[in-house]
Image (cartoon, rainbow, N blue to C red; front, side, top):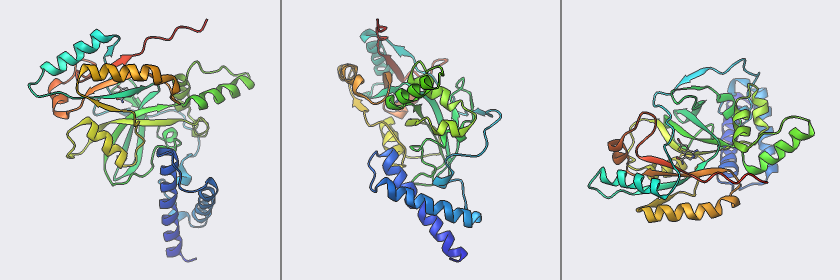
Length: 318
Ligand SMILES: NC(=O)c1cnc(N)c2cc(Br)sc12
């Protein structure tokens, strides 16, 4: 095989393996058996070894980086990653809806989403390629955990358009991964993690990406930071665009146009919550119109256009 043929074959394998990975890890709907994925990955590894000049970091063979880091670099969030104000009961929710509604003479619609109990992360893409991932930190300064986030298979190394944008979401550990991790830790006489959130945070704080890679972490993306001009005018439109770009979003969101619909959504998920394969600790309610969000603005530490309804703390198991 000459160089041109090798380069073409490597590019074709990268494209088809990134598509297979998208179907398996983002859509949870693989179109080929694992054996076909593994065989093509082996073929790509061999070709990249024979022609290292064509090896690039957006290759599916490059998910688990090299040597462990000495420390995490600091990252500045140009747009702060805010925390949410909390609502604990129906009255708090009615107050939130009242405040949002009286801020405009236009009708206000809301988006309700599941509040994932994980670790907030920011992912930056330049011309469609994943270039940096960071923790929220204190909202302004986070830690560069790119090498660990690259090991999360549902985070695309290349998205479907060559957009330059920052997306935000929650990295989390699914229940099943949490149970097996703690089983292994107990078997090795190590301290088990108290809950999936601590396990996810502990995994992403590992300096060696080989350890993070073994923790079966996942991610849901639900927001954006810096995104050059685009025509989207609602939060629900953003969720749909993120999905189109190839990001893993949580499909359980719902547009609500009244407090009654919000309360109904909360009631439904209060019952359904135990059937989810991941931990949620509440419901996030946001004003859908981006223009209305802008008019509402922020308090010192959280947006006025969003609130987190927190589920009552579960009774300690006696
Ligand atoms: N869908 C969402 O907006 C969402 C889901 N899960 C979370 N833990 C958080 C946290 C913030 Br801040 S927003 C958000």
